[in-house]
Length: 437
Image (cartoon, rainbow, N blue to C red; front, side, top):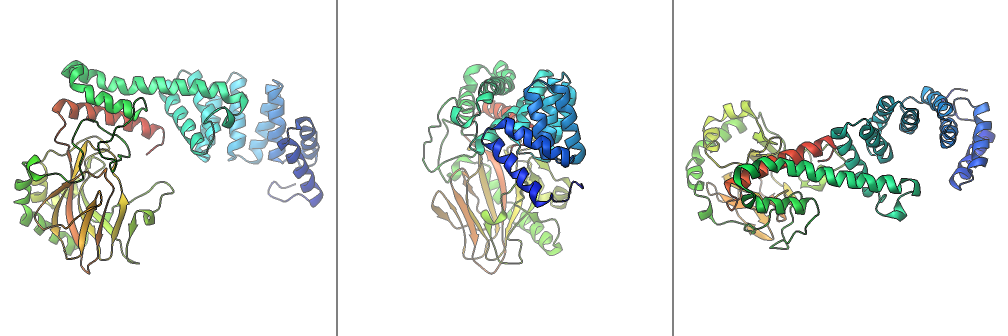
């Protein structure tokens, strides 16, 4: 029978009965029914997989591999089959082949946390710990997002000890990895200089609570203790603001030339997950509500854009901008079209502050941070902490544009900046390997 063809009604009823027996724990009965079905439907991948798992439970590894390989011949892209094959090949003493099968399973279904857990265990067996660690972390994190492996009740009995062992493995190795990023900085600056950085890392890892000075502040990623916490910051803390503001006319002229050319602006929001632009932004139908002309994005310098705006670039090069590979800075001309509304949201860390240099500001445009409204004035900067809930809108009939840039929080010492640069880079590398944003 063709694998894609539907079985006749009588066989469909027998398949349903076998599934029910399996779900109710009547394994011997289900095995007998699936064996009968496979005799009639040799391409029934579901039956082949069930029989293979029964063989595997009896330590009949070779028989299990034969059954799983038959199932893979029927459904080569089925993640369940690939996971089962991975388990069988690992039991057979072929961990390299097992890792290949399990990797294929999670590539087809990235949220298949059980397959990823077995992949991590196989990589650990192969002593490929740099690969095993992020796979374990993602498997555990995904399982818990689905309400599994939270406690004994949500963890199958056969997995309780392996899951607990994996949790210990992840905890120990993440601590060692991130602490290792700080070791050279301790040697250079001394442990006392990095005390607050150590506290921030402890909060990030869940070893210490975050005592927010203001309950309105909630960083999404990293909270740094012991520094000022407020929605807006006084100008006196940033002696470079006046020099930047003095360049307003030259910067705005380069902006106007870009707007006339209608080239180089791109959507600010991009998502690789199920998140939707509509959850963060409102705008008029048919318009790109929020776009940016980026000088830096995720820490990458856009050389072509910088070359097109030499006066702006020269002004930026003299500022204490945060520079962390693959993360910061974000520097751009930020354009809001008429009717656009950036919905309330929060930033990732209080270690850096956001500055706006308003360049084109019609009436009825404003910024709100921590519940306090601010109306932009062209040529006059505003500095704020975006870990407070904030939003912005353009209720006019004209385009609004501000220059946005990230700078270090002024309470951080040079040693702390160095340590954060190293630490955030290593955390980012790990999260990227784990497929986490």
